[in-house]
Length: 80
Image (cartoon, rainbow, N blue to C red; front, top):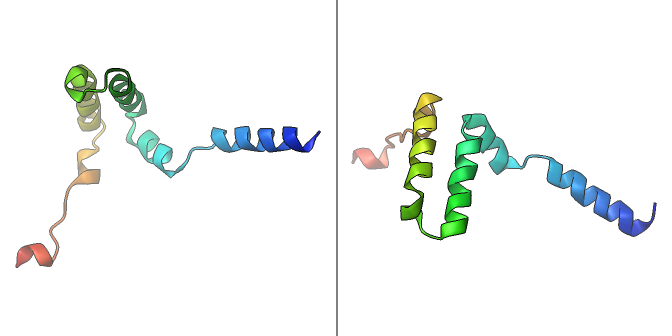
């Protein structure tokens, strides 16, 4: 295998692994909905035209119980 082929194979192998962001998205159970929402925005460049995709993501988020994951917590500073 030439050096160029080895570098290309390594890059492909690295792309197959989930990065931290992808791992977080997949752990929500709503990766498919999130992908559709992002694809919509990429295609249309206007979130207002992606309301159906955003609502599907919201519903999935609730259905999978992810609201607890993102709930804000009061800190000592906010209590003052």
